[in-house]
Image (cartoon, rainbow, N blue to C red; front, side):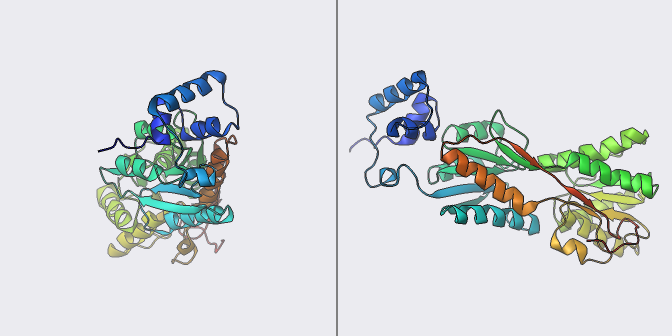
Length: 332
């Protein structure tokens, strides 16, 4: 049997660099230090690596495909983000390969496998741990999406903590609420964690005690169960939900108890999905640029693939006041 052919990933691992750096050395383009170039060339010699003439070499080491690692594909939030990323990839003439991990324990292995078939990866949320993120960044250009920074890897996020504080302050200041419950799981994502922190910030400013969050998956069923637990536990006058889907679930929990959102109990969401303006009463929420998040992450990744620098970005979010908090408005 013959030994397996050395590939660009083996060279990158041996030299301790990304495949983009190996590509730059092979093509003689782009900024590479003398020490790094010598290390890559030594790894190439030791492994006997030569580009496959039927593979990447024909396309200048480009597969014209990017990958995106998602925690889930269900729900309007993920759909909007994904559509934004797809729009950017189509505009660049690139394919988009999607991996939804669904919390599977082999998520790290699946992400590494995907990295071998694309020019770069976008990793969303906490789909894989920081160690895996660093390993992936050593293999391909990498951008993080809706996740806290890891080292100097570019990340794209939208504002969450400050808007969540302003939303909570709207409930405490305009409407005078003091018994508020946070519905959502801060451990599920960095976005949910930031929203929980903003909720606490508003309470600290007023020196009002904060109840622990009523942990719930970020979907309608989770909202129904989490809100139901809160309502049965301490009868809050306002429910601050980690997402619009959670808030819609909270509507169901209120209805099951003969209570009306916006009248008996204020309810707020986060995201401003399309349904938020059409439920009754219309949902007070925070509008974040979901499609723009995906598009921006993909555009930054394309910059990295083209050996251009890319910096982390935080996109603005906007408080949208409607009727579910108790305001008499049909604002959009």
